[in-house]
Amino acid sequence: DKGNHRHFMLKEIYEQPVVVAQTLRSYLRPLEEKVALPDMEFDLSSVERVTIVACGTAYYVGMIGKYWIERFARLPVEVDFASEFRYRDPVLLANTLGVVVSQSGETADTLAALRHMKASGVTTAGIINVPTSSMAREVDLLMPTHAGPEIGVASTKAFTCQLAVMAALAVNLARAKGRLDPDEERDIVRHLTEVPAAINAALAHDAEIEAMAGTIASARDVLYLGRGPDYPLALEGALKLKEISYIHAEGYASGEMKHGPIALIDEHVPLIVIAPSGPLFDKTVSNMHEAQARGAQVVLISDAQGLAAAGDDAVATIEMPAVHPLIAPIVYAVPVQLLAYHVAVAKGTDVDQPRNLAKSVTVE
Ligand code: M6R
Image 1 (cartoon, rainbow, N blue to C red):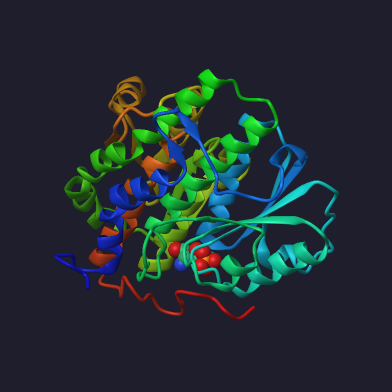
Image 2 (image 1 turned 90 degrees about the vertical axis):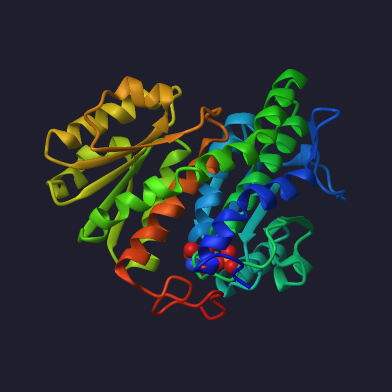
C-alpha cells in the first residue's frame, strides 16, 4: 500500500525518520549514552581487520563504513564488490571480521561471498533487512536493520538504516579495541540520536527539489561530487539517478575531478555538490569553483554555514540542517534520493520498477 504517495519509492523516502529511529533504538542505549550490539559469541577485541562485501547501494554503505571504522577503531578496512571478491582469490588473514551488507539478504554474489568467507574460517557479521533471508540465517552475528519491507527497486530507507547500523558497528569495534573514550562515545550517541529529526528537516525541502527536477531531467549527463564519507554518497546519488531516470550520471571524489572528469564539464552538465560544512568543506568548494569556471551548472547541498561560505554563485542550493560530519551522509542521502525521484517522475519513467532491473539480484 502506497498510502498517500504516488510511488513506493516516495513512501519509503518519507518513512526514513521512523524506520531509522526504529533501527537506532535497537542499537543505542540513550540513558547510558552507549551503543550496543546484539549478544554475540565472539570477542570484537580480537578483530584486527575488516573486510566488507556488498553490491550496489549496500556497497556504498560499506565504503562509508570504511571511513567510520578506520576513523574510530583504527582498524584497516577493505571494501569489495561481492562479484569481484568471490572471483578473486582474496587474502583473508587471521582475525578478519567479514561484514556483508544487504537489504534482501538474498543477493547471489553477496551470499556466495559470505559462504566463501565462512569456509575460509572468517567470523562474519551481516547488516541485513530481511530477517528470514539466507544471509540472516548464515552470518555469525546478525545486525538487523528495521527498515520494514522495501518495495521500490531503488533502495532508499534500507540505505539510511544500514548506515545507522554501520555506525553502531564502528563504535563497538572502537570500544572493543580500547580506542574510544566514553566522552567520545557519548557525543556519537548524541549525534546519532539527532538523525531522525535531521532527516525530517531534510524532507522539508522536497518541494524545492521537485522544482529543480525539470532542468536536470533535460540533461544528458549529471555529475556528483563529494569528499570523505560524502564521496560514496556522490556514487549513490549517481546510481539512484541512473537507475530510475536513465540519465547517465557519475559520482567522483571531489579531488579526482581535475585528474580527468573535468574535461566533461560544460554548461550542459549539471554538477551536484555534496558538501556539509566541516574539515573537508573548503576543499570541495574549491573543486566546485573550478567546475563553475568551466560553465558547470551547480546544485550545492550544504548547511546554512556552508551555503553562506560558498557565496551565491551556485546556481541552486539545497539547505540541510547543521549536523555533525559523522552523520552527514545519512541526512544528505535524503535530498540525493528526492532529486533522483523527481527527475524520474519528470521524465515519466516507471519509478518503482525501472527497466532491466529486479529488486533482488539472485543470479550472478
Ligand atoms: O538486496 P541487496 O541490498 O543485497 O541489493 C544490492 C543491490 O542490488 C541494490 O542495492 C541495488 O543496487 C539497488 N537497486 C540500488 O538502488
